[in-house]
Image 1 (spheres, helix red, strand yellow):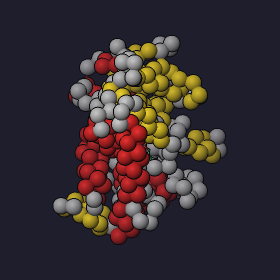
Image 2 (cartoon, rainbow, N blue to C red):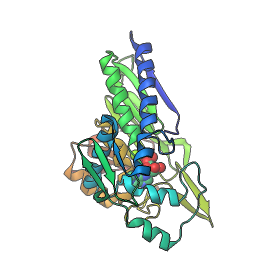
Image 3 (spheres, protein in one colour):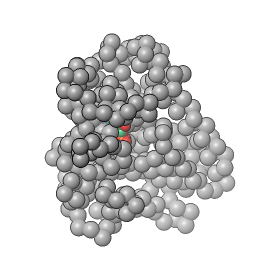
Length: 302
Ligand code: AMP
Ligand code: MG
């Protein structure tokens, strides 16, 4: 998954649980990697039809649900666009020309994915990339491993995805800081949480610059170019680890207005912290008692 992962667990079975978690992560990475020729995703993208394991199938199904929920802002079929912009490891970053983007956009959209039992079939020019959701799914599996091993205190950090299991060994809440998108060595605030995921997506995480313009790695599936929604970073808090990951990517594309509407219709599903291009901070109602910050912020009410 091309990132640094840290799992810290406390208690009697902690060593066993962390060993099992590491194995699970390695298994999922083998299934989901976009560049590893033996992965299910690589095989699916190259053969366009593939019988899939329960895990890969579950992620693809959830990704298509979240595509619907986000009105297409989250879309795993952006793969050819991400490749054209050179965001995979074997390619150089570049700005594709308009004609190329327009051609690629024709194969983007979850209507190009067909699922029949355990077989997924893609339209000829369609490929998928689970980079915006795989870490969240992995976090949910690791979190399950912790419960199965009676771990009541653990913190799982999978590159930008943090999942809190129970409370700290001293019985207090876990503190997860949110990076300042202008200087990720600093923070804009802290969330005190238990039993949930805290996931951040931001244009500062992966990008290149050309002609004084910054091009980041989250593509708007409607335009084929890096999203320009007016947000610098999005942090999602949810008990659904997979949803938290996909929604952080989706809401980064959607912008504050659409995100607010989505929140008002789904207050039970998630909460969020948004940082706008102007540096304003917004948090949703459900985080009022767990967010602390030295900066000013506004609260979005349902
Ligand atoms: P995240 O870091 O979770 O926000 O995910 C970003 C990654 O998801 C990118 O590096 C791409 O692999 C993929 N991606 C880019 N744009 C989208 C999109 N609009 N919907 C779903 N996945 C995307
Ligand atoms: Mg994501």
